[in-house]
Length: 474
Ligand code: NAP
Image 1 (spheres, protein in one colour):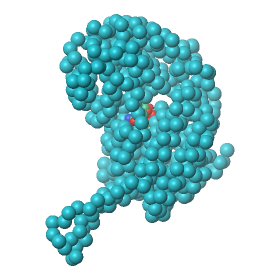
Image 2 (cartoon, protein in one colour):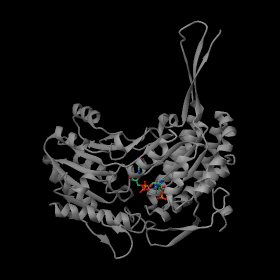
Image 3 (tube, protein in one colour):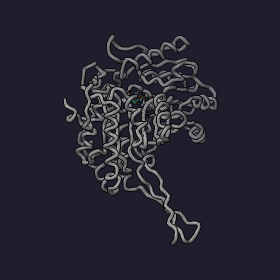
Image 4 (cartoon, helix red, strand yellow):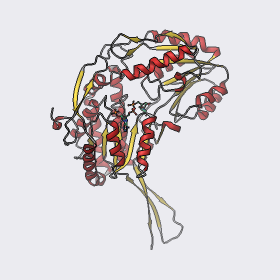
């Protein structure tokens, strides 16, 4: 396949290729040009050349193009979901929901594009007028992960485009195909040449370094691990480049003694096992009050035992494969560490089959905060349950981490609901719900979980610069 036929690819030369596999069965799905830093630099040149025209269009013109893109994504939702499931492994129903979510971000920012308002400020003297206008930051380098390969792309790119920025995107090596398909639809929607540029690469570090060090790139928007985020932040520091980072998490999920236990079980199933636990907002540590611990654990384990693990095009499947062998090795290491330190496997605990990357949905009780599962992001279908007695102490323990992305708790006492929601040091708190992501709300973390927000009107601000204009001599 020639480079010209790769959907959304920039017309740059590349010789090496890399392979994309289906994690459910190891089948080869595609071979893509493995672009190098020089190719990324060419893509940046194209994006830079396109900036003036794109930023100079009216907000309505940019909005209309985004709206056409949104419609095309909806029209091709079935195909996009199938590509996503094939390369990433999540169940088809989840893939469909991710595509709707991706489309919702595009729609939201098509609308927000028309609401980039400035302000006027009362002047300190009568001969002056003080104004603030908002302008696009410039070329954006965007880097996305494999776990939500469609919605992470849409969540970054649509506010950037609405603001008037142009973009160079490097999707994750494991899941570049759905990004390519979404870019092909963008082309069809009528984005001018150079506004959107896709760089496929297996060497994320080399292309990332080019994006961070290229002076024409004015902002890096990254979603991925905290470890890589730290590295990119250092690389951006030479040029004081603007950054937006959505990084890792270690979400606590607390069930207080006044919780509706059945609702908490429902919420925990959603917050833990969606995408086989491979979400940044996945409930990583379940703290359950002693008075409801056994009831919660029994009901939860019953539900976990009923989850179907299968190749993801199978009907009614709930859990697919893990993304790769590293992910499998990490969950196995967390399980054995917990068992050595006194935890009890109540269900699951093993990989499924000799080949492939399927792991049984697993629940471990008797977990303590010393165990790796309580300290590190597991990123797999493993639920550790930690018993607690002191409601104040559990909030303190929940906050005792370098991460601050998402937290969940179940309680009914109104005073407690407010106190705990305010005390949790997280960018997002789900109260009596296991799912809270929406294009209308600001998604993002505090501490080492990130900088900036995506979604909502706040997500647009991350791609805009304020300019103060003082008109004198009046
Ligand atoms: P990752 O290893 O950090 O990779 C993310 C992206 O960065 C990929 O495109 C990867 O490219 C690229 N990359 C890797 N090393 C790089 C480097 N040295 N320089 C520049 N780019 C580099 O993370 P992941 O394993 O794909 O994703 C899982 C992590 O993402 C988890 O920690 C999860 O919590 C986090 N996440 C956060 C959010 C959020 O909104 N906060 C959302 C989703 C995921 P290659 O694929 O080529 O290596």
